[in-house]
Image (cartoon, rainbow over all chains, first blue to last red; front, side):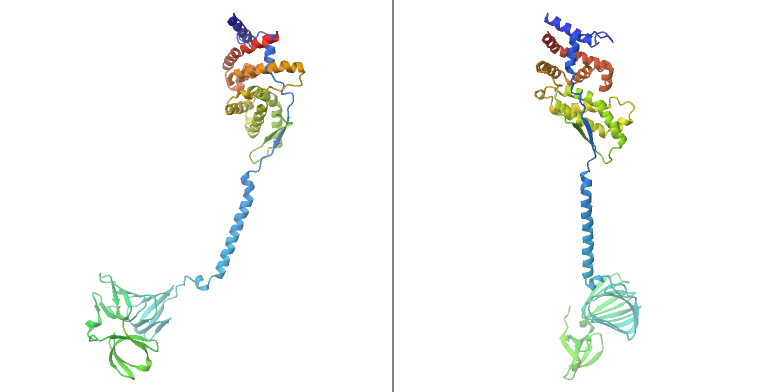
Length: 279
Length: 183
């Protein structure tokens, strides 16, 4: 009974909605009243519409202050940099010394720079200074190198390359060979024609080389010293040399030079005499 | 609840042109009544309906180019409404306890008593309907044809009728109660 009443109501509702017979609705007052309850009259008044303009993006809002900060930072940095540049010492500004033109030295010329002194006795040499580095190119040359301070110097010869950091030696070369008579300090020598590579010469010593061979002669081997002590003479005029004493008297010293040859030195010209330190 | 104005915020960077603004105002006037009825019944809460409606109009405003460019845009806004409402319902988890009575225009005390009983019945009836049947019933009761509902919901007319049949079966106990009350 209850179920049949339910079915009848569903049929009634479906009929009213035209869902039982296609395109045909059966009017039903109760159902229409029920449907109206679902309709709300909340639409009698349509509120006014207000369209708000686009908000300024937060990024755009901060863009100007951030850009101003960046510009201020750059300006400050440039100002600081310029100030620092202005207060830099001149030496620092001239860190890169421009290469100077090669100078040619020949017999009788003297090269002086600081405490460095090179006396050219024969031949000639091309001397170039770059950023404190001295390069000497020579084929035939006899020169006395008196380098009393540290220097970055290199001698280029067809047969050898000599690297010097501060020393004293007599350099005598021809295209076929030559000798380096080292009185003080040490030298690094690269032999180009031989495969011996680099040799290190320590004073007192003498290197004799030809196109095909080389020989390092120590003072003991040379036979000139007879195991006598080697002295280092420093004269008042700045000249320094190594020698064996032959005769010492109050007015003068007769000495045999390390490189060969005898010399008499007046005592009044001597600044100091000391035993040479063997390196 | 509803205030004197509905404020919609334009996004993007370029403000709306005056022509587009006029077109949107006309669009708003046309769609507001049905949209509010639909949402009020679907969400069963006047405040929620108002919030969802405002948000839907805001979305519509910021996609208004699509509406203007489309040749068949009769139910374009309805798609936005449905999506916004279903998102809202999912978020609140269809909480029945939040159901509030629907406001009505200046009733008498007797009407108020009858309406509150009727409103209670209608609210219970709507709550008994799953959302997909509820939206069909709500639109049907707003005097929309099955074809119009089908077009608005993106369904076939047969599917709409089928859902309406199922909705009617679920509404039957409430209809019986209503009829008993009428006697």
